[in-house]
Length: 273
Image (cartoon, rainbow, N blue to C red; front, top):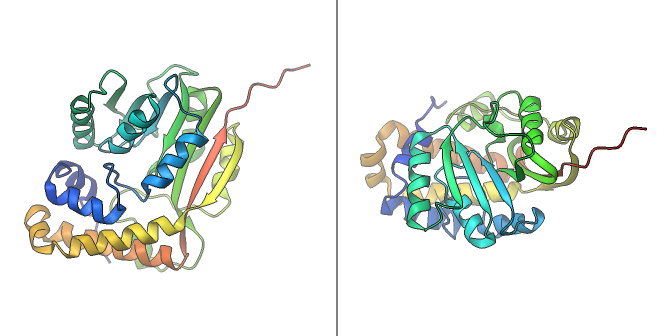
């Protein structure tokens, strides 16, 4: 069983290294700076679901190093605010926004996406959280807060890659959650909580194969560069990350731990008689 590993600090502090870019290119096949289980084709599909345009204002929760957010802004012309609790991620993301000439439309700030958000009611046209819902405690309150900052007729899109759909051992659960706080969910709970928060659920889509494919390629790409990565990360983080990716690949490939995409809509208030 693996102890907790310094996965996010290691990833974001070394994000701009050439070896990190090589690994992302092999893991995701197309590198937009992602650190999740999403493919670029999947991410592009999200733009249409969210009806994004140059007039859209988007909030991304757990924006990491900012790559997908910047890709979204470049592709759709939208305005975007990204929140993350990791200072290395925020620093990397804001530097990238400046380098890409997007700092007037895209900014990143250090904040807890699972807490009370520093925005007024009805600020955003869309709220997005990719593969990080499982890191946020008190999911009912989180969804209520996201509902608050969304405009009427705005959209919520999140993915939950920690949905229990089969039998898992104690060690598998421990290793799969070794990179930080994890909240494992039963198959129907997300849809229920989305609706309890006031949203209309539009779509629930199985995207488990992305985890199996990305984790397998990520594991192999890192193994090819073991010597260099051990020097950069240290033995504990290297070995713990490999163990994490191996388990992530196996339990998703066997559909024992699944990933689902949720798309929801904030409806107009129903008039009272």
